[in-house]
Amino acid sequence: INMKIVGISACPAGLAHTPMAAKALEKAGEALGYDVKMEQQGSMGQINEITKEEAQAADFVIIASDQKIVGMDRFEGKKVIRVDINICIKAPEAVLKKCVAAVSK
Image (tube, rainbow, N blue to C red; front, side, top):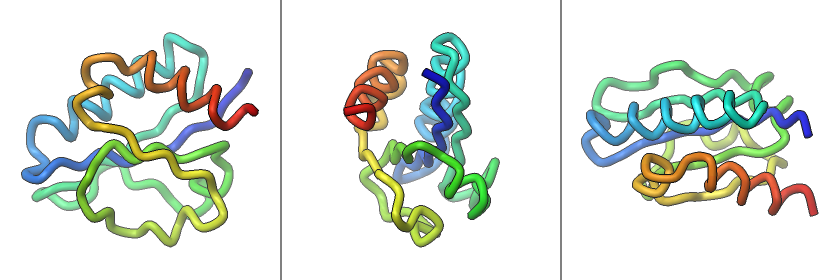
């Protein structure tokens, strides 16, 4: 399945977990053959920002955070899946597979 996935990772400080989760999910996406783009939000603002066009072209959205996310209106009408940021770091392939299975039903 060729999946286009966008997502946002954010942790309270936005320093360690945020980029770790974003990179882990992007790498896992490559390994699984998915197109994954992760935006990072934190104390440094937004990195690798997802445009409204990218958001609308995506099959679904992953939110790796329990924080308040900036710019959620971009994802209007999209299936949004919230996942624990720590699980994204520990088991990113499992997270993506589970999300893809959930939206492919």
